[in-house]
Length: 311
Image 1 (cartoon, one colour):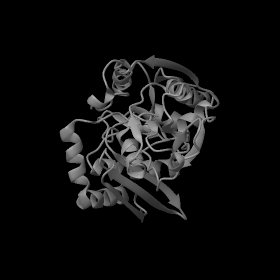
Image 2 (image 1 turned 180 degrees about the vertical axis):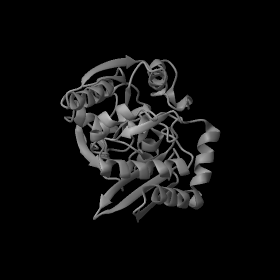
Image 3 (image 1 turned 90 degrees about the vertical axis):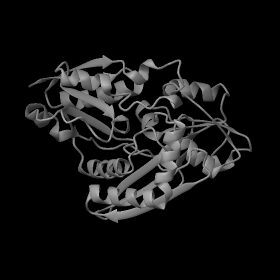
């Protein structure tokens, strides 16, 4: 069978994802190698991410290696991938999706509702910040950087009363001990694509596409296509306070979405049902823009407070 070279970031979670895909390919008889890349997002360690708005911060260097034929496949957290891919690439497979919800993690408190006044909540995501502040305007939201282990270590050290992380990353790494509440989309709407992986190849590479076609999950692809269509319609990337979660219910797609001011003082929600993932996402996204989402996003861009979404 073929030798397939996978490109990945070097974080613990990224490597779990790459090795997961590697194992599935090896089970089909392929020989697989993993190449590790340090992306722009990985290199920024002394600058607040809230001041950086570069698209593809966690994917650019891997895509460059893909374009130059140094690797055959790139494995990403799908929410890190810009909604508009460069024309030379395609998402050839979206494997079965993990839990897309956000997880409330704490040593002492069982839910966001039971936090005391002035509690310290850690997250670097504007989407999470906005929804936390809308739910609990009395708590103090503080920036939280680092990989999953670093963040959990800061929680355990008492630097925060609670932190918000993606349930998918915690599940994949087997680090669920601090999870106290899995937050439903109506309470904390996830990022578009959260919990899903993207297996990216060079557009038109029929051989590699054939080898990895079995990885593609129809329900996962329909859901994230809908979410990314909404994000694209709203002109947003993974750095803006927009949430979107789609799922198949009795054969039809249902999507819930949110856009909010980072300070939580205004939050807009909408939902919809349909059969065409792109049309449904664009329709709900357009409705949110008309209801005031456009003004919110203009404020965000004007203040330059975008921050990359993290696990």
